[in-house]
Amino acid sequence: MLSQPVSYISNFFGWFLSPVFNFIKRILRPFIKWILRQTTGLCELQRTCYCEPSGAPRILGIEDSLKQSKSVKVHTLLQFLDLAAREKRFTAAGSAQIIHNTVETICYIKKIHLDAHQPFTKLFGECVSIIWSLKQLLHDLENIRTTAYDSSNMEHEEKLLELWNLLMPTKKLDCRVSNLWKDIGFQGDDPKTDFRGMGLLGLENLHFFAKNYPEVALQVLSHSNHPIHGYSFAIVGINLTHLAYNLWKDGTAKSHIYNICCHHLQVPGPTLLNFHRFYCYLFIEFDKLWMAEKPPTIMEFGRIRSQFENNIRLLLSNANCLFKLNIPVEHV
Image 1 (cartoon, rainbow, N blue to C red):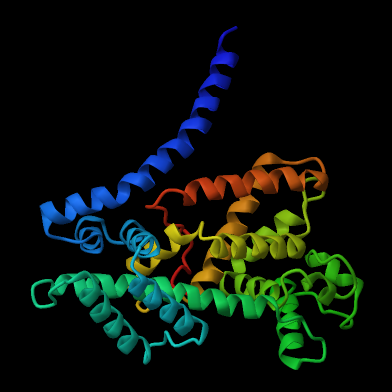
Image 2: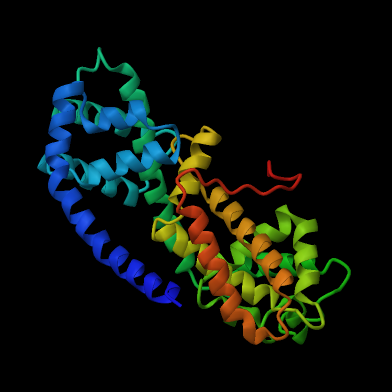
């Protein structure tokens, strides 16, 4: 009888103490940093590089330390890096000089002797490269997302028709505007209307999945056509593009992104290929959940979609999270 009131009390204190704890932490942070600097002889950035494990724990620590810095010079540097990301200067050719200058600037601000701390310059430089390469990629993703599907654009049309051929290799499309599009989960006779929410990014994701993981995509499509527990393959796919994009944009997916960059030694950082693979992982896992739930009607989509997102966000909350497609063509 007491379990429910106790639960309410526990939740209340958890809700109340969390902001109090965070407030105290913010107040004490400068003092703790000063103590650690005096006792270790290292600034917070150095301690993070040397003490945190490679991957998301280290990169998230560096990112948080830079963001919370009280130094005007540091924030001026961050503004410069943000501008470089917007201008797409983090490339194989252009990143090296930006990173070199950033490391030198931080060492000057933090009074770090380069000769005595050479490992720091390498580790910190890699973190900065990955953080701002991700910011640059997010600008690219936004540009693709806001590019509307254009039926007069031959590249758009060819990719859409190739999507049909990949998913329906034995069935010929009678004409460009056709009721047959519903067979792969579009809502009407012309798929271009379904891309309005996520623009060209929705098509790019579907096309990548069907082209690079054809056997898996066809299996998922067959599940979506189940006579009782089916769902609209293309529409769900575009919805999952929206989920993938939001997880990257709001920073939830950073644990996976940063870990995969370090796992595959990707410097300067993540690429569009990583986003497409992340999307494919979501599609495959959503299909597994849907088939396990066996919903009697498509009206259950909202509930299952919400459950799926909560599951994914919980997994990504772990700094060691790394999603991997356990299929033979992972190297694509």
